Amino acid sequence: MALLVAGTAFAAATKAGSNAAGAGLKKNIAIISVFDPTPMAAPTPTPTPTPAPMGAPLGVSIASPSIDGQAAIASGIDVANYLQAAWGNGAIPAHEDDVGAFRFLCAPTHNSYDDPIVYPGQPGKSHLHTFFGNTLAGANSTYASLRTTGDSSCNALLNRSAYWIPSMMNGSGKVVMPDYLAVYYKRMPSSDPRCKTLATACVPLPRGLRYIFGYNMFDPASTPTNIAKRWWNCDGTGAVSGHFASIKEALAGCPAGSRLGAVLVAPDCWNGKELDSPDHRSHLAYRVYDEYAQPKCPAGYPYIIPEFQLGAWYTTDTTAANWYLSSDRMPGMTPSEPGTTFHADWFGAWEDSVLALWTNNCIEKLLSCTGGDLGNGQQIKMLAGYNYGTTTTLVDVPSASGATTLASTASSTTTASLDTSTLKIAKR
Image 1 (cartoon, rainbow, N blue to C red):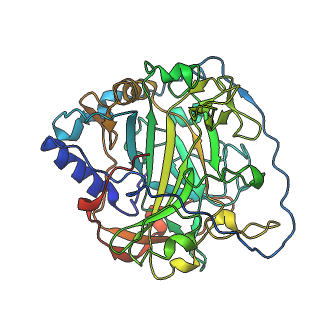
Image 2: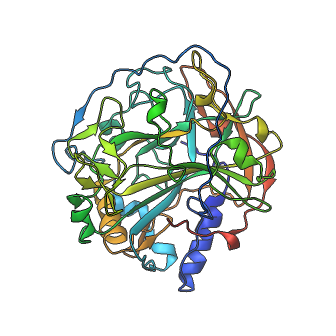
C-alpha cells in the first residue's frame, strides 16, 4: 500500500538522531512536547443543551491466559529484513536516569467510521477515526488479523499494532491529517525495587492487549481530570507551548504554520487478568498516591506495564480556529468545546521477538531509545517516503462504509519548515 507521509518531522527527526549518534552525542528528538510547564487549569465549558448521549455499547471481557497475554501467533515475517544498523553505525543509545524509554513515529494511514474495540465486526458504526500503524486495521480486526496481515506506517512490519484517534475536522467538510503520531513507552527496569513496592512486578506488554484512554465518550464524569494526562500543546516558530485543555486555548499562542499537538498518557497498572474489559478501560488503572506520597498501583492492579504516551501533531493554517474533533460533535450528544473529547485506542500486535528486544534493552537497561532504535545496535528500518517540510494536509471525508487513503485524496496547503535545532525530548 502506498503511503503519503503527511507532515514531515519523520525525516527531520530521523536525520537529527542519525547525526547526533554519529557524533557520539545524545539524540534530541521531538517526541511528545518540547516543554513540560506547570499545568494550567481547564476552562469551564458552556455548551448549548442537546439530547443526552446514548448508553455505552455492551462489551465483553477478554481473559488473559497468562501474564504474557494471548498465545503467540506467527506472522511469517523474516525479522532480519526489517532491521538495520542503528543510525547507520550501530550506535548504542545514551542512558536515562530513572526509566528506560522506547520511542518512534507513525504516519497516518486512513480514515474510517470503524472502531475494532468498541464496535467489533460493525463497519461504519463509530464516529470518524484516523488510523496509524497497521494499514488494514478496521472493524473486523482481531489480534490474529493484525499479526498476519497489513503493512505498517510505524517504521516497518515489525509493529503491526493499530492506533486510532478521533479525526480532526477543518469546519469545511475536510479531514485535517496529522503530520505524525509520536509514541513513547517508558518503564522502570523489572529489577528496580519500586516494582515490588509500587505494585507486585513490572512486566512487558502482554500479547493482544487493547484499551482506550483519554476522554470517556460513554461516561464523561470518569474522564481523568489531571491535565498532565491529557492536553493540547503548540510548538514551532512563534509558538507558546504549555498544557492546554482545548484547541482554542492552545491556538491562542499557535500561529499559522506552527504545530498543534494533542497528547495523552495511558494508565500503566494492569489487573493481569484481562486483555480487554467490557468498558475497554477498567482492566487498566492510573497510579494513585498513598499516604507517603508514592504513586502506587491501586488494589487489584498488581502489574506495571510500560507507560504509553501518544501525541498527534498537526501543522496549522489560517482555518485552525474552526477545527474540531469528530468526537466533539456527534448526533444526540451535547457539542463539546473543540478538542476536549480527545481520546485514543490501541490494539497491540508487535512482533514478539522485537517487543522483547526493546523491552530487554531500552527498558531494562535504562536506555533512551528513539526512532525505533532497539538499544542493541539495531534499529527498525524507517518508513520510506519521508518529507522534510511540514504541511497542512486535507482529505475528503470517507463514506460510512469505506476508508480514504492519503495517497489518492490528499491536498496540501500551508507549508512550514521544521527547525530540529530546538527540539528536545519531553521528560516527566
